[in-house]
Length: 370
Image (tube, rainbow, N blue to C red; front, side, top):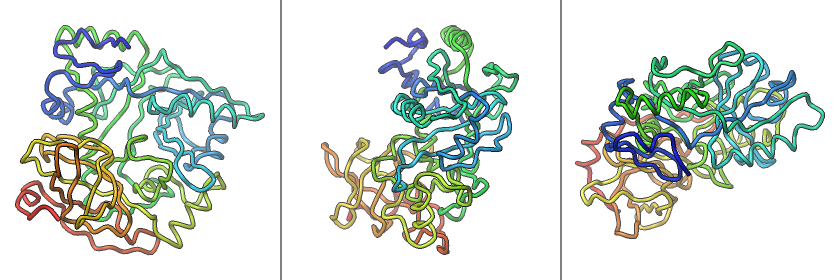
């Protein structure tokens, strides 16, 4: 698949996606300073138009969006009848159309499901392949001209890790994503080509998705696809904080969401993983995580962060102990430490004391292995 960014100096493109432009660590720094934008060709845009669009989306998703004001961003999940996550998307409405930003791997399935659920509602659903998505850390991206068909620029501001109305956060204490101001901007094809040309002429700095993913992982932000499997519950990923409204009207999967939150604990939980970088082995997603020799879960995301070194996210069973662990790879065993994100006691009544955040220096000094 061709990419408009292949002619940018240093660009490495895989399957049409800009992975990096020579140095993902430098690209992270540029993103953090607000000096770079990232073409997100791993994103797709789905439009939902028609007078019933917001009320309809409210009725079939986990989030309260019936009264979503133009230009306001939110996030929603579509669950199966047992509360497991089937689809995830960012949403922003311009007063005429609700714009969903989704992972390309899920776009066609989402469009097909929404179309089946339309019934007699006055809505139209389209995958908009003529549009592109760029990401940036700065809330105002001077290098990009946002798509604005109804006069309201279509800019999605990631609500993570704030606790939105009706939400609930399980991670306690200082959250590493608190200072992250991530935005995703929908642009048309001419704007995408303009940015590509400016980057080829070294007038605009680009960052690839490797750098974007590293910043996401450091913020404990679940991916719309990486941390999700057929068993995933929103609670396990601390996703009640931005993607679920606990007191809205009925929707598919709501009974499970309420029951797990109010009466129980999620069977698995998300943890941050600090990896030993001494052997220069970066375990791939899917690698087995072990504590005291026992398999407790899998690594779901991994990256080399510009400040924190090799880090990742993992889904482990609820009772797995935080602290020393190992990650098994084809190249050998990698020492690691697990840091609590979702506590084992997660639930409406849980009150869990928060340990100080594990710094890279402390992780390297601590005994590793199991």
